Every structure is written in structure tokens, then in C-alpha cells.
Length: 208
Image 1 (cartoon, rainbow, N blue to C red):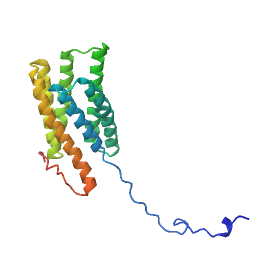
Image 2 (image 1 turned 180 degrees about the vertical axis):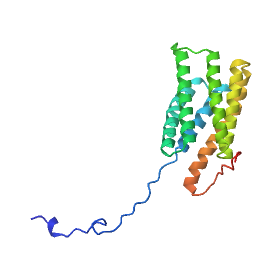
Image 3 (image 1 turned 30 degrees about the vertical axis):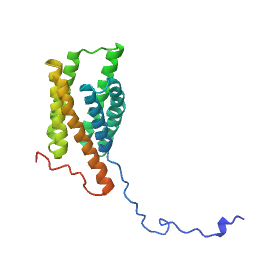
């Protein structure tokens, strides 16, 4: 005879008729990855646009962090019911993946794309960004500024491909500001969780 059958087991809360209370499961904020992926990839691309680094690091960081990681963040925003974050992170993740594949295609001779083609590609993303900018201005001041500077950067890059290449350098410096704002937004979300208070405020929205 085993010892276990001689020892009375304590009744579980369910068996004793007690209500079992479970603490709500805490989920991470997908924006901390989405904004970091967007901010760092954008920043490195601008380092290239102003002539500080070659295109190689931009392609690989853009594919993995700006592309894949940002898309995953967007899909997590979908689960959270955040349509703005879902659209923004997923779409700009696709932007980074497609842009890097365009650069790889041009380098390898597979489906080469002309400078004019890239210009129209950027025009399409300018239109999308214009729509998202209106929504961002309704959420917070910092998010509004991220999209205002992003929209301005896209317009400058459009001009660089259809008018004068000097606009590429101008866009490079302007979009560094955009990247910095995105990293600020990421830091806001991280610090809010770590400190339990709003260390880096996002400000009131431009549109009410």
C-alpha cells in the first residue's frame, strides 16, 4: 500500500467551492517594437542619404527590424484592436521590405527599377502617409509631429527623384528629426511601463 493514499490531500479551491481569481494577463505594447524598428531604420537610411554610411547596413536592418519586426508589431496591434497602429506598422513594415528588395533587385539585376520608377513608388507612399498624418494629429502631438515630418520627408524625396538630387540630402536631415521623434515615442511607452508614470509626455493632439 502506498503512502499517498494514507495522506489526505488538501482540497483545491475549486473542490472546496471557493472562487478562483486570476490576475489579468498583461500584454506588452507592440508600439515599443514598431516605433523602434521604424525609427532606427529611418535614421540609418538618412545617414546613407547624407553620405555617412553605405547602403549595405540599411538594407539588412531595413529588412529585419524596419520590415519584419515592424510587421509583427502591426499584427499585434490588430489583436489589440488598434486600427491606426495595425495599419501604420504593417504598412511601413511592407514599405521597408519592398524597398530593400528593390535595392537588392537593382544590385543583382533581377527586376531592375529605374530612378523614375522609385520616384512614383515614393509618391504612392506619400499619399498613404498624408492620410495617416490626419489620423496621427488626432491622437497626440508627438505622433502628429512624427507623421508631419515623415510626410515632409516623402515630399522632399519625391522632389529629389523628379527635380534635383539636392533634395535627398535635405530630406536626410529632415527625416533624422522624424526618426528622433519616433524613438521618443518608443521611449515614452517603455518608460511609462518601467516608472509607472508619464516620464516623457506625448502632448495634446493637434486635432480635437
